[in-house]
Image (cartoon, rainbow, N blue to C red; front, top):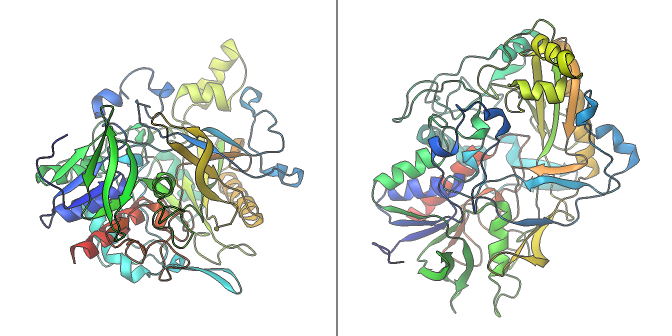
Length: 550
């Protein structure tokens, strides 16, 4: 493949980090090439949410849009923790016994390979990390310390909020702002109104969804299907924001369906080329500067795959930390039916958030914290099929009657909690399975610690209490205790000042290779207290790109 221009910067991955970095670079005249392993998605073709069967269709899977992974040690389940197992009042959807081992729930690692990455199916929460999250004490003599502070990243939060369009209101429990939100907040949904009436601690959530026409994109129509793909383009996913604008400059080239196979280092230690496959042919491109933004699973895989005689443990791995410190997402969902509530299937998903427990020290006796989110729509309780199969029983006429009587009265709350790095949780290369190109696939190992289990109990209690305060009868609950299912993963190429204990510096530059940078969630030393990570990934990537420009 002949490139029109030799790139100044090559980026692997077009999700939150890669796209944000590309946009910042082309604004200063830098020629950028993005290599994306997955395909492009076309909104009206791939997200047919106006069809009668919309409820049966999750986010679409296209050829090449999910990477292969295998699962190693996910931990052992103990009887003493069985109270953390999910359940449903409707026996038809109860989970069968799982035995002693925690198992992945297909696809396990829920991500998207494609132009825009996992922002294509994210719900659009645009939350800043709490200032205290950058200095987290995990034990009296141990800390997870970021090499940056909230003050360092705050200007870049504001920058990317403007780039993608974020609607919100005011500061969020200590997450102070130097600039206002680009757009006013969205109206609160009927389900959200019920929560506001029961507890004053609920706040309007910051959302990367247009509350008014913005950046040549329309306002949201409140179809409630953000996680199934946005056909209108009002959701601020990376493809319709950073990448669209960067391609319009003529300085960005995106090659999709082009999985990178390895990075090549020269004798000086610089990354000289990347190898990728396009249309069945292996090709190389020079990398004056290379940014890895393939995510916290595929970024360490590529570094480990690229081992050489000089670097037998993989590139950028002088510290031995590549793949280590893996953090999944800790989650608990509770849903119930509220007598007298109507139209809870309407509105914007995740429109309210509760930060009461979402900062270090907020949960007694446990390290880390968690947030609560109103998630009736994102959990799929916005259509009659979900009611018939999940929250009411009966058959025939009795089933129809119950659906008619209860539809629109569901209320669901999700809790997302912090995971502390543990030596048993890491990403490695599979010893047994290879992809279509003969390369070892990534293996995910992720064990819930006793701290995670205790935090999960607090999360369960908080969601139940919030529903009961609204008068809800709880009808189903779901948790990560016995099932690994994670869309947010972190920490496998952590940043830090010390090259002995970290992979990259405070800007994402490799300690070992001066022209290699990493711009995804793998650089995060901690996962935050449940905040959605997309905005922080974008801000870190923009900050790294600024340093590259300097």
